Length: 356
Image (cartoon, rainbow, N blue to C red; front, top):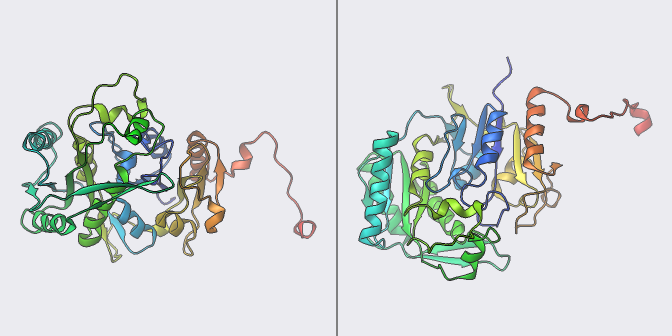
């Protein structure tokens, strides 16, 4: 019997990816790769679509810092049936907007059957600030990270949470050029970098699944927005997809044992990455692994602001034009089919002495 085939799909956040840089617009890619894999590992910004989401039973929702640790072989992933989710609300959220998020959380309990613990409000406003690098990539800071960590500790120790959803009040910037470009499908997500900082803090400190949903005032109606950003125009909250993802997110483990339901980096068979986004920790760990040699696929059509191709970091990758080709490449690899055998012409074998 062949062992399960595992694919990792990475689209780094906050770098203006043409596909995956918007509101869950890489979900079609994830759905397609999941069909040709036994297990698909990817991160929240690929699967999150505000109030939209899709149940992929064989997809693992792994936060970015946790994905880095997994790729490095430091942490493994332990499969779960269901997590108890602790909800943390930023004290800086206005009362009406807080009610909207609590109603969304209650709706996932009543409609989807998710298990949420009692919620926690931070003891100080988190104070999120948004930043943009010279390259156009986005990042951010929070003024009171200790308040976030204290809230997470309470949710885990007092409420028994096994995963953490954070809702932080983000600055309203409806008039900025960056947001207008993003709504038109032409810019970098102005929130993504700061969101990553928030979830990284919690995962690094407590080694539990975490994801973030920003609290924002509703944007003014604009009939010209791009379909790629349209999911974020629905309703008052982005929380539902986060709660759905965390409900089955794998737990992080640091010691391998004989128990079933564990996945480690040396079991990864294929890695799919935008062709210019090879500068991230997880990509470099998997692409330059000494214990495993997964198929690494670089997708040309998914342009980003990162501009780090695989050869710049010493990774051997197969370049394809689109995610459609990437899905076909993974399907062939999983089947044990040499990809060149699918071409109309195939060269005859050569004698090694002639090649040398």
